Image (cartoon, rainbow, N blue to C red; front, top):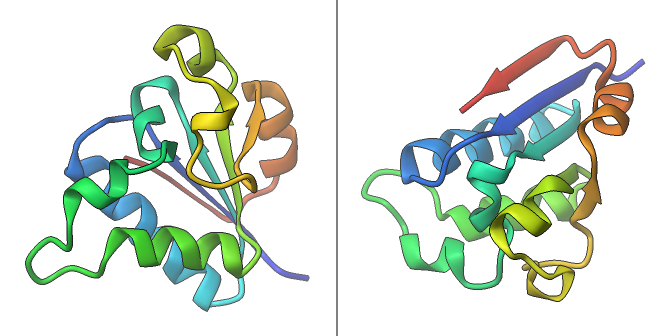
Length: 120
């Protein structure tokens, strides 16, 4: 059975998103079932063009490539539904149509039993 890994992004700075995508992509590469949750505070990272503004930080992988790897390799990426009204986000503004919009309880039910949980 594949172990679950949960990564939560709760901030809008590079110090929040870079470990989020690095840990999630690393979990994918190790065949974990990866669940990534973006709280309203980190919601901007799920929008078109926001990751691109970071460029590639010195000595770190490209965040756009990591985000795409997570989705392409079957990671589950969820934006908290509360972010829509709180941040004025429209679903059409999301960087990828594979990003799910959910409330926290269904996400927590999906993530139940995770072997590892990280919050950035």
